[in-house]
Amino acid sequence: MTAEVTQITSGSLIAADKVEGTSVYNRNGDKLGTVDDIMLDKVSGRAIYAIMSFGGFLGLGEKYHPLPWSTLTYDENKGGFVVDLDKEMLENAPSFDRDEDFQWTSDYGKQVDKYYDAPTYWS
Amino acid sequence: MTAEVTQITSGSLIAADKVEGTSVYNRNGDKLGTVDDIMLDKVSGRAIYAIMSFGGFLGLGEKYHPLPWSTLTYDENKGGFVVDLDKEMLENAPSFDRDEDFQWTSDYGKQVDKYYDAPTYWS
Image 1 (spheres, chains in turn green, red):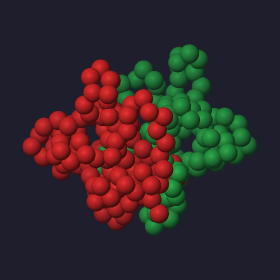
Image 2 (cartoon, chains in turn purple, green):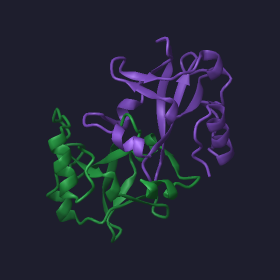
Image 3 (tube, chains in turn orange, cyan):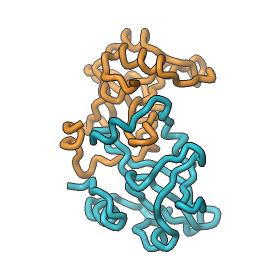
Image 4 (cartoon, chains in turn blue, purple):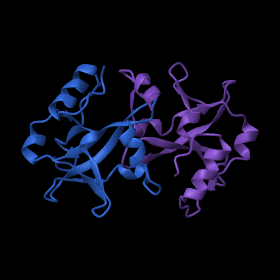
């Protein structure tokens, strides 16, 4: 947690409204998708997951991929997030459908965190 | 920061999209306004301010009040945030107009944090 504090610098504030729609790239600079929403912890106000949408056509068959926030790095030059993931890894990742009446459970959350080898949010 | 970690419990995830529109109440249960947006630190993903809108009529003369996230407590029963502030304190608080081309500066941020006696985000 200490690392977080020292990383905070003036001028790195962004409105949640503006994060939504931000592009997500891989290390090669290929665009993987777009941040559709952010899942926050209500109490601490920490962003836990970015919900990325990719694939689909005009919203049909669009998939939502929750990415643990720790997998994302903001790149000022690109004006977007960079993740160290290839498309194949994303295609096999936990996802849910746009139209599904999706409910977060701790089991689902743990599965996501494990897939990306991220520190788990769920106790 | 340690306090934050221990406060995190399963099931307290919420989508940023849903925080927007959440009511803000004072300790007496009076509605003060509505969360319009959240300002996040891009690097750490921490919510730093909730931007509350209150007053105005059909968007005319509406004011935006940034509230340090630490002033907000989420109340599950109310389904909204509670702040320990009265209307007078809010009316005199730093705010900006809806139509203004507003730019965050560290001076403005420090002024906000100081007004609410909140730990400052700005170094």
